[in-house]
Length: 69
Image (cartoon, rainbow, N blue to C red; front, side, top):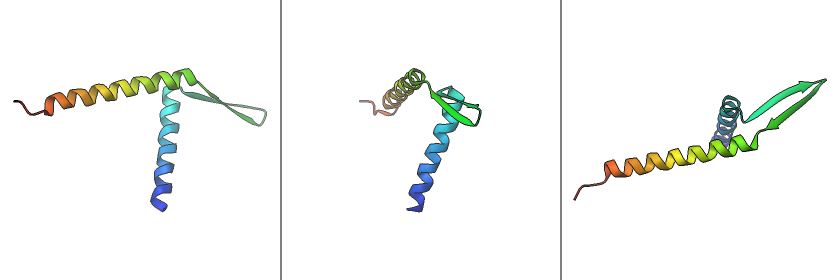
């Protein structure tokens, strides 16, 4: 169970750092309140690009490792 919590914590930290770097959200403070604004369009756009890049990598690795007949 402890390993599951560690994995969830790692995912949250990676998402936080990656999201901050990619500009998926912004955090502002005003008179003791904390506001987080999520840029949904940017998240969806970057997610689509990551999926396409992953498919491209998988397709290229299938071609290079496939046995030749």
